[in-house]
Length: 88
Image (cartoon, rainbow, N blue to C red; front, side):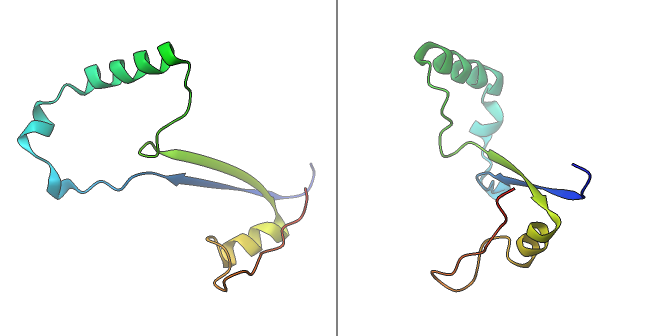
């Protein structure tokens, strides 16, 4: 791949509002919570993340596609319009 290319990394995660921090949050054993989540996932074989877990995406883009993406990272503003990316 001698041509320049770009990488777009996107992370979608629940927003955290520190104003909602309570004494109960500080008293909670987070390591125990993590261990419980790992144990539950291992026992069910369910590798799906819940919608409250962060999701990460990585896309490799050619130069032209990177320029299009930068113009409208969330897609076109017009309903029903589509961006045309190359098939590479």
